[in-house]
Structures are given as structure tokens and as C-alpha cells.
Length: 356
Ligand code: NAP
Image (cartoon, rainbow, N blue to C red; front, side, top):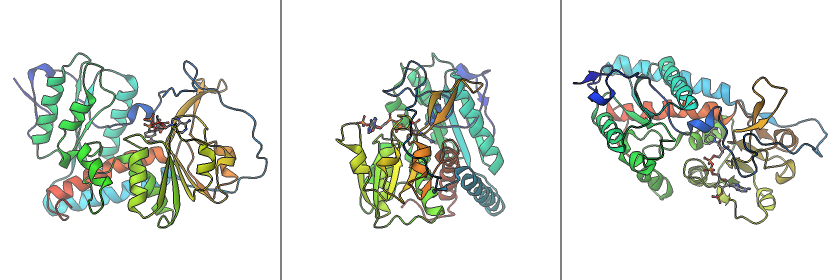
């Protein structure tokens, strides 16, 4: 028995029939919204912040408004989707596989669905119970891989512990790997003369923010703090592709403040609230803060608020441009997901050159 999930010929096997189907979302998700990535300095639930700041002058940095820029990107995507519909009678499709019932993942999936709807991208999705086997998930990936109406596939992370993320992420065909997590796409990003089919959304969003706010990257010294596969490493590789001279700082780097002080551009993707202080920055540096960290704040309804990896108050007085948290990199991540899905559909319908 099979149940069709929207057009596109995708069918569900019996195991999933009768369950709810949602759409959209991706990745980095669970950190993105809401929930506590508990870093090394965190208390059981929320981190406490260092309080005193030696900086007392008025802030001078220009705020990079990620929300407004992401909105502009979405409008551009909506216009392109509508052009595609006119010229080939098709629109891009994004499929999401969600396993389990984590509230944060469900929220994230819903927000992606909404984002797709707003720009005219079709969303397909399947919600599977926590006890779904790895083979069942692989089966869904295969079905979406084979479905021509689907141009992008996201497997919502984290997956339950009994499922190998590596196996699942690696099973998404690279032509639909809109998360850019597939080793082939990351490998191509690292190679001279190669262009990946997709770059992961958050680092791509960081570069987009720099470019759209007129920051010159070529020839500049950039320091990326953090070297994860999904943010720090691809951010460093992208900056290098843009001809910056790049230094990567990580948890074993001696004196990270001194290294960071040499940077014209700083991308912080650490997961430690307000690690980067004002005195880590060269005056006039451009600061992109990827971090999303909940810290205790009893004055708020929820009892916490979100801060970045950079001490915003201090950095504002030293940097020339800076992204806020929230409202900086976060909104760009979803915009880049839509952008990757559009690119994929354009490739599929011959509206751009085939694979680079
Ligand atoms: P991750 O996988 O935990 O990686 C953190 C990186 O930071 C690691 O490379 C680690 O070094 C390094 N690090 C940790 N402590 C350090 C220290 N004290 N000094 C220097 N480097 C240190 O985290 P992630 O997935 O890259 O995420 C980073 C942050 O970005 C988190 O706050 C996350 O919530 C946020 N995020 C935001 C978005 C968005 O859309 N805005 C998307 C994704 C992630 P080692 O490699 O040596 O361990």
C-alpha cells in the first residue's frame, strides 16, 4: 500500500502511511532555534555571562541587518521561481525527512515549510517515529533521490542515536544535497579549480552578508573561529575561494585573542557565549557572529535569551560592521537553503550550465 505525498510521484511505504506529513527544514536546526547548545562553559541549562565591560564609549559599528538582507534574498528567489514557472511550467521542490518528535526540530521544519511556501517552492516531507530503522530512513532518501519533482533533500539533524548520520547524509545524492553536507560537496569546496554543487547554508549566508554589505574580501586577513564541518571549515574554505588570507582558530589554538586581533574579517562559529571580547578585535574589523547561545536571563518570560559567540556590546565599539544575534546570520541560513534549492531546480531544468 502506498500513499502519495503531493505530486511528483513520491510514494510512502506502509510504515509511514497515515502519519503526518510536514515539510521543510534542514539542518543546523536544533541549534538554530531555541535549544541550547550547551557548550563547555555552560551550566546544566544556560550559561551565565561575564558581566563587566571595560568599554564605555558609544558603539560605532554599522549593524549588518541579516533579517532585511535575507528578506531581499527571498524576494529575489520568489521572482526567479515565478519566472521558472512561466518558462518551464515547474517549480523547485524541497523534501525533508524528520525522524522523531523533538519540539525544536518540528518547529524548525514548520518554519522551513512556511519559507518555501512564501517563495513558491513546493515542499515535501515525511515525519517518522523515533523508532524508525536506519534502513527505513535510507529508503525514504532513495525515494526522494529518485523523484524528479524533488530538487533538494534535507534530513533533519540530529537523528535518533541508533541511526548513523554519516550513512544517511552520505546517501543523499549530491545533485540534491542542498545542505552541502555531502563529503563530495565539501571536498570540491576544498579543491582548487573545483566548484561544489552546493555549499552549506550557514557559511554561504555569512559570505552573502559580507558581499551584500560591500565588504571587500579579496586580500584581507580573515580569522574563522571554529572548524566544524558545517560552519567553520566551509566558511574558511569559502573565504579562501574569495581570495582572503585565512587563519582558523580552534579550541587548541594558543592565544586565540592575539591571532584574532590580526583579522580584518572575523567569523565566529564556536558555540561559547560571548567568547570573543572587544579586545580580541582590530579596530575596524568586520564581525560575523554565527553563534546562537541561550544564556540565563530571569527578566525574560522564557528565563533565557540568545547571545552570540561575540560580546556584542564590546565588539560594537571596535568593529566597523557587525551582525547581531538574533537577526544576523540566522535568517540567512534559511534564505540560502531556498537559494540552493532554486539552483538545483535550475540545473535540473537546464536553466543554468550543468554541473560545474
Ligand atoms: P561545533 O560543531 O561545536 O564546533 C565548534 C568549534 O568551535 C570547534 O571547531 C571547536 O574547536 C571550536 N571551539 C570551541 N571552543 C573554543 C574556544 N574556547 N576557542 C576557540 N575555538 C573553540 O559548533 P558549530 O556547529 O560549528 O556551531 C557553532 C555555533 O554556531 C553554535 O553557537 C551554533 O549554535 C551556531 N550555529 C548557528 C547557525 C545559524 O544559522 N546562525 C547555524 C549553525 C550553527 P575544536 O574543533 O578544537 O573542538
